Image (tube, rainbow, N blue to C red; front, side, top):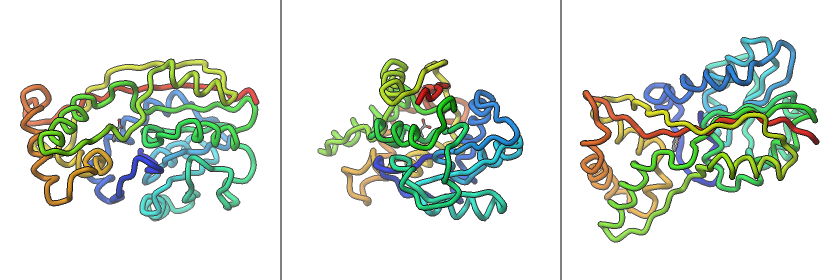
Length: 264
Ligand code: BEZ
């Protein structure tokens, strides 16, 4: 991902995403292996960002369509991958998107690092059920329970020190919660796993600040813009001993991956 900021709001800078946050889609190649796209099948990439994984799905011979809630991302994806189809759409209401590229059921729906932006997860899963054929597979990776907990906790503490009451803006489920939600909408969960994946942040000493500036709008929201740099500095001070190693910040990512088949 990328991520469709449908309610965990964030402003997206597609160029910065490609330049400094490419690890997001580079890590996505593992979950692409889980999708194993087949030549000729129709695959929808939900939260496609700048379209790198949509491109990889198409390169496997599938008919790939990317959707993202950020117009900036969709425009960048169209520029970077001419010939592929990208649609500006809300993942919570895919069936409502008035675009021929989304007409007809998909054989598979794929999503990398996007679903955790959607706190209305029931709506998102119901929306995927609306566009996938019976027997089709839904393959995704998102942040799982306690993902980036050290960063979230340090930021909430820094906000509290200054009198602001913040909250985690993201949806990081357990396997049980996500499987139950999938089942509620007609999916049979074939595989689900939660694992730690400590993730090095690009940018050396600035890696954590870059990450918070790129993704942290919702987390930092209670603080006025002119105080945010100071709060980010407080977060760095709180986490340096544990999470800054050999000149690189290492975020405490935890990933939840699943494969679910739509039973209709
Ligand atoms: C993630 O990929 O785990 C993530 C990215 C941005 C914000 C929160 C989580």
